[in-house]
Image (cartoon, rainbow, N blue to C red; front, side, top):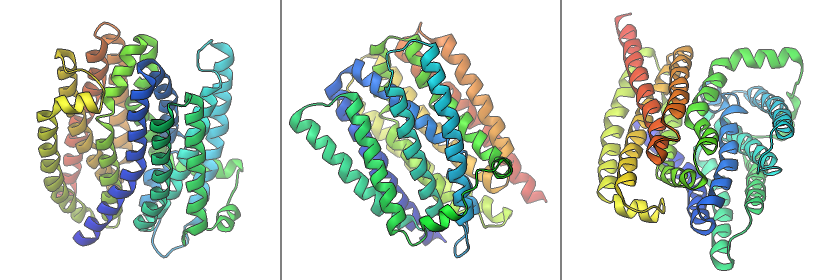
Length: 411
């Protein structure tokens, strides 16, 4: 098991590293070329797409990894995920259309591009979660290699020939993701579009059944998105564009570590989902004892070289404000990594409702801090909203997770 875990986590880290790492490098390139204001516009639309990745799959990211089994017929579960994705896409599309009519804004058609980008992101998310459920971590690495080549080509073009408009960047990202969708379905031995289409069912009965099966997973992802990404939609309304651009630049530091959280969580869940409850606790604690000290060591090194990180990654000056914000960033990275592991623990123990309750607390705290700290405290206030909610979620979920393990050991 340990060798398989190490193999899968390496493959998953490489795969997600290519996918999210190429996007991260693209964001850094756009920050340097666009300037803070235009980058703020791009980041806002990109945030919409990222939030939709948490909303539209309705929990499929971890539901499929947990429920799909190797060497069994799983196409029906995949089709259910796609059906609910399309159903929610229709609802979100109508909402964006209505809001666009009722409220004047500077984004216009860019909002619809954010929706389309979120849909193709979500579709690929579902496909790759399905492949991880059947243990095929290596195939995603190959497909994401193609995606990364396309993004790196775009970055090279930008440096050679100058920046493109925000709209053009969004169109290209949509095209790149559609290419990876086609390649995944065409070349995977576990994906067949005929089998997928065979189980497509938009009946009210099927939609209701899917909701009941995945409600805790789906609502969990929506609530998590509201406090991880939701603030990024509210902040432009409360702070100046320049401050928002600085805030998003600072969060670029967090992005690679968010990738580590996702990679570790997905592999952890795939390894412990079939274990007995007693074994789950042992494996979980063993892996936490290995990974957390490694992360702390990396964060210490990150802090030592904070001047380089701030100036060359976040494109921000080193001053008292950015130094304090950087400490906040390190706290976000550490707390979010630990609570991501405990989330998988609660899923493996079938305690999804507890996980959802904790994230609701985090979302409420995040909303309160946004209105209490902004716009009075600027960049520090913006980062503090993430720090406070992350630390509170970390404290609650670790306490409850350990309590649930004690119950298992006493049973």
